[in-house]
Image 1: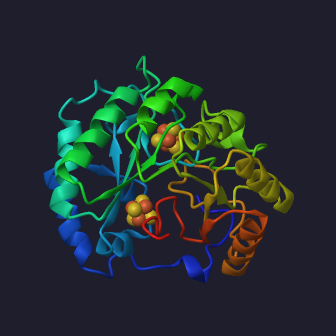
Image 2: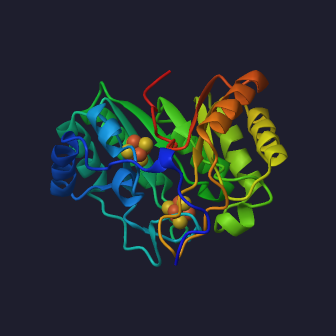
Length: 280
Ligand code: SF4
Ligand code: SF4
């Protein structure tokens, strides 16, 4: 099947250009680590890995949800691996990461949605890598405030939770997640005194007004860091791209977001939530 819209020039990039990705990939595979950089087919691998930033995924590699934009496997996950916190912390050390972004699959099969495993992993990372800044990209923990608070008690540098898309498209783009619940997650993070961060994708069929409305809703939670990136269809089985947003439009949305009150905005066709995370 052909994509509905032609991919524009600014998205045709060479994923094999820089050599440090080979070394990083070797260390990751030795530690049996899942990264979003690889599983999400992220176009920024070479750049991020050279800058010693990577996004590691915990909780296994099978998600209980099935979002229509996401390339992660979904189904019934295996039991949590109690060695994973140590493996993650050791990989970060072996990679010499200056900035580690931790995310997970959603574990709706577990009583605590994986919160205790998150806490153990973060503590182990902090113990073995006291110099590394840790950014979290958390699931919604079904909106359970006490679970979010437990994770925030580890005092991460930044904690993010992505809105992914505008209100109207949420039911058709995300699975199980709700727009208002995700806003509540961001609010809970800021209430814990942790710097909150979020992002959403453009090119899924949202209107200009809906983008502005989403920005306003996010600002009301106290979250002032935003990433905006182009949705890219990972395989023919995923949602088709509805529009390719130009670099100029992305720059315009950045300007608008800053005017509205965001403090840190990264906006561009190849931007992912962890892109240039170490800045600012
Ligand atoms: Fe990995 Fe995020 Fe960088 Fe992509 S933007 S390579 S997912 S750290
Ligand atoms: Fe992907 Fe959705 Fe699962 Fe997150 S919750 S890993 S976006 S399927």
